Length: 243
Image (cartoon, rainbow, N blue to C red; front, side, top):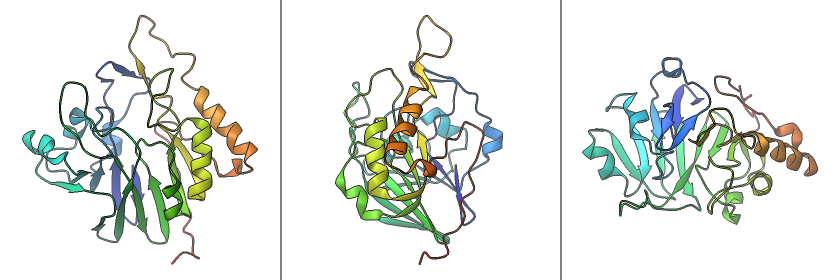
């Protein structure tokens, strides 16, 4: 949840104890989250566009989704769905949402033909800019919206191996160099793992954040790192020098 200029924006909510074959390792207090003013969806994969999680906020919750994803949600009763493409902007009160490119699969999954180009978002209001990439690989255009105050950078996935279209800890450090954030919050790590015979936390679950911290240290920007565990928050001081 990003609370910026009084507008509450929720990104890619996957809040249930299970998502398909994945299990969550932290409980989520949905009541504490509250109802968002806007939900941003970055791409079609089930761990990002998760319909059971969206239903927790009611079918009237405003959604912004990649172009092509709207029919899927409208068929399931969601009434306020806006489709967006990279290059567009969306205004919500004092908040401007810039829709930006992402390098990730456009498919929903193997059992559907549904496709929509993945996107990211840059949120700007009150002298603060927050970058949420969704899932993406590294690409040079990230530097186009630098600098930002906060970069929510994905550093891994939900399994012991990482597929195409994702940032690993080392490429996430490169992304931080392009985006030039005052603060970096690593996301998309340590939360879900595939269900199996073992019930505990896999050994690899926390390794990405240690690699990310080491990489930022080597790059000389470890002081920008803010590691958040579920249920915690980060207050961002307003950059008074920003336009």
